[in-house]
Each structure stands twice: as C-alpha cells, then as structure tokens.
Image 1 (tube, rainbow over the protein chains, first blue to last red):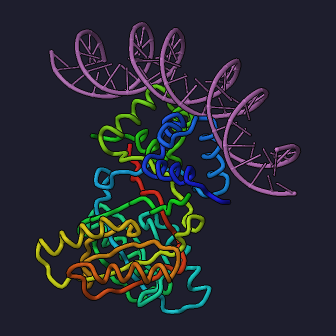
Image 2 (cartoon, chains in turn orange, red, purple, green):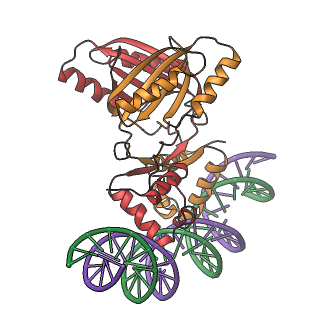
Image 3 (spheres, rainbow over the protein chains, first blue to last red):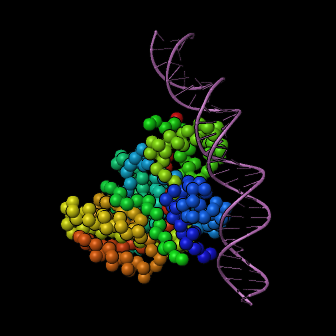
Length: 155
Length: 155
DNA sequence: ATAATAATTGGCATTTTATGCCATAAAACT
DNA sequence: AGTTTTATGGCATAAAATGCCAATTATTAT
C-alpha cells in the first residue's frame, strides 16, 4: 500500500492522540469526515495502525521502578530459547523482551513497585531455565519515553 | 486518589484497546455508561491515564530496524548532561532515552530503516557533545513488546 | 443497630459523532 | 482529449457521548 501525505498526517495525529474523534481528526488534516474515516479504516485493515492503547502513569499505579535486565542463556538451542521465551511471556512485570546482538542475548524491560519487589522478580528470572549472566540496569530517569515514531512524510 | 476494582478493570480494558467506545467499555466492566464515563474522565484528570496513542507498524513505515545504543559521557557536570539530553530530544529517530545505573550512563532506543540509515544516525550520536563509549545492540527479534502494565487489581 | 449524610449509580433527553450511500470532482490511463 | 478509475464531500440515519436528576448504595456518626 502506498501512503500519501494525508495518510502520514493522519498517522501523526493518531500517534499524538489516539482518541481524536473523526470530526476532529478530519479537521486537523484538512479533509472532510467521510474520506478521513475511510482512510483510517483502511490503515487499520492494512495493519499499518496496529491498535490503540491508553498510556498510564506508572508511579500512580505503584510501578515506579523500571529495570533493564540483560542476560545470556547457557545453551543456545531452539528448546532453550523457546522455553525461556515462554517463561518470559508469562511474567506480566516483564513488559518487553528483545533478542539482541552483542554481549547479551536478551534484553528485558521490567516494571516493579520498588527494590523489594525487584528482588523477588530477579529471583524468578534467575530460576528460569538456561539463564546465565544477569545484569540489571536501573532507570534513574526517563529523558525521553514513548515518543512517536518519526514518519518520513513524502508527497 | 484511591482506585477500586472497577477503575482497574477500566484501565486494563483501555490499555488493551484505547478506542473502545464508552458503551463498549461500560459493558465490558459491567457498569452503565454514565458512571463509566465519569470514571474515565476522572482517571484522565487525575493523570492516571496520560493519553491515548495509536500503535503503528514499524516495518510498514520503513522503520524496521531497532537499535539500543548505550553510551557514557566524558564529563558528568550538569552542563554536559543537559546539553546531551537536549540534543537527544531533538533527534526524532531516538524514541526513548533513559539515564541508567551501571556501566553505561544513557540508554537510547533508536528506530531506523536499515543499517545504512543507522550508520548516519550513529555518526550524529558520536558527534554529540561529551559522548564517549558507544555500544550498539541491534534488535534481532521482539519476543514481547508494548505489553500492558501489570495492574495489581485490589478490592 | 439505626439514622443521617455523602457518594455513586442508572436512566433519560439532548447534542455530538459515526457511518453508509450517492452524486460530483479529481486523477490516471490510453 | 476521452474514458475509466479512484477519491471526495454532503446528506440522512444510526450510534454514542454528555449532562441532569431521582434512586440506590455506601459511609459515618450517634
């Protein structure tokens, strides 16, 4: 699918405010409501818009501590990986997990209330199958976070 | 503000789908529309719901490569930090930046189209004031990403 | 326990928004 | 230039949001 400038403006607006009404959105991108809604629907159908989510205040919800956990696996077979990944998927406090290049194998982002809770979670991670070499990096401050994707606006 | 189980269910639903209509939402949490809407508005006013954003398909938007960039600053004064942070805030391809404990000082998450574009961006980062010891970790695969926050449902 | 008070809820009326349809205008193609 | 295709804007209808008020539930004090 080829996106034009209007599509990019729509995506930009919805990245900034995913709950704009179609009327507001169409106004912001200088289009009348009907074609605007059609474009949004199509962007959703094509899988360019994956979804919409509310962004929540972690501190207010007792999840004020964020930790990046880098770790390696002892074995590197398919079985080790998939067992480890399945375990991680089942841990709700692990909100992201990437397979990465470099020294570590996996990089997890973990949210907890405080150090006490982190200690408990770390114990769980240590006991996961095949896990070796855990390094915790605590987030002291978010300089920038949840930024919109930079859209290369054409046309 | 004290949140009860209903609030938590509302937050859970809006994390999963930020564009639920109030009617749909009220149905999912077993409440009638009026009080449901009031609760949502209050959660927004209290800053517990920070906002709503569309989540986009990076590959479709030519941002298929994600890189974690860990780096240290040569100097650690207020001026070095704030100059560096300002620079990073101005780079749209850097979608997050955290001050972290451990070996590195800062951890950036960068999105680009491909290695060629990453090389250009890396050059820019290297030329930022006070930057030293850059380590790039390429994301090979996302095991888990953009997960909802784990809400400790009470009541 | 009971009564008084406060907070929350549910339903209704009104306003706003979403949605489907069609005629028109713009764009692409030959 | 003429034809076909695609996108647009406006309108009518359906759905949702919003504000208001009476009724219910929860809280507090006695």
